[in-house]
Every structure is written in C-alpha cells, then in structure tokens.
Image (cartoon, rainbow, N blue to C red):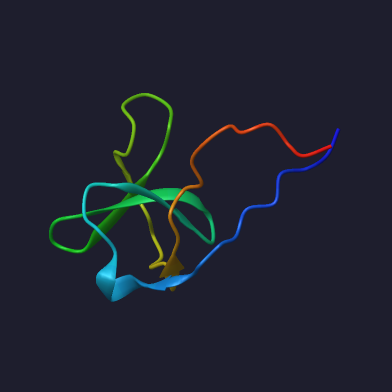
Length: 69
C-alpha cells in the first residue's frame, strides 16, 4: 500500500476563511468570527478553544481517486 502525498500550500492566517475546517500545524481546526480558533472532534465538534494561535493554515485535501500503479 502506498501513502497518499498531497501538495500542502501553507497560507497566511490573516486570509483564513471563517467557519471552515482547515489543516493547521496541530491537526484540524476552524477559525470563528472574532478570531477564535477551535478544534475537537469528540462531543460537539469544534467547541474546544485552542490555547495557541496557528501560524499557517491549508485546505483539507479532497477526493479519493485511486493511487496510480
């Protein structure tokens, strides 16, 4: 089995869309209105406030195309 390698374009935090799950250096997080970053996939998703501020964000890769042989 091969690993999937996706291009990861690190974007500046000041242009991050609000209310959309994105990749950050610590995993998946969401920027809410007011500049609050939240995470968490247990209980109610995206309700745990980060105690640090991400330095970059990236889109979550989409699609499940088969890997080339």
